[in-house]
Image 1 (cartoon, rainbow, N blue to C red):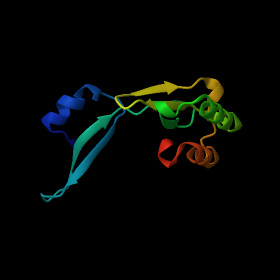
Image 2 (cartoon, rainbow, N blue to C red; image 1 turned 90 degrees about the horizontal axis):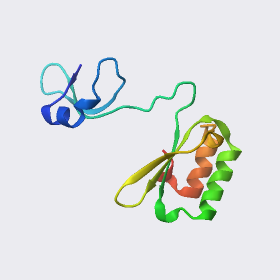
Image 3 (cartoon, rainbow, N blue to C red; image 1 turned 60 degrees about the vertical axis):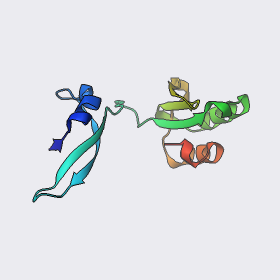
Image 4 (cartoon, rainbow, N blue to C red; image 1 turned 135 degrees about the horizontal axis):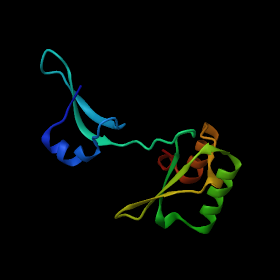
Length: 126
């Protein structure tokens, strides 16, 4: 059971539909005899059937040089697999999310994560 306050409901209520899958971020309230889970944020997870979870890369737009793009391509091609790659390009004001084509799907194992973290930074792979 999840408690949703009016402010949270006005912000995220449009995501709540019967039989829909949602991810809820919240807190536990233990003030009464029985603990309650209070929703603070609701998201609809991206569900991809038949594939592994997508690999997400976060890169500032200012870092996207031809050299960096070619190096990312090389790493992705070396770890071919079934997981989609989502590129989050940040320009300071907004983030644009791009789903790379099927030719860049990867094996979502630790090796590709490690190589991309070395190239892009620890926070770039999530």
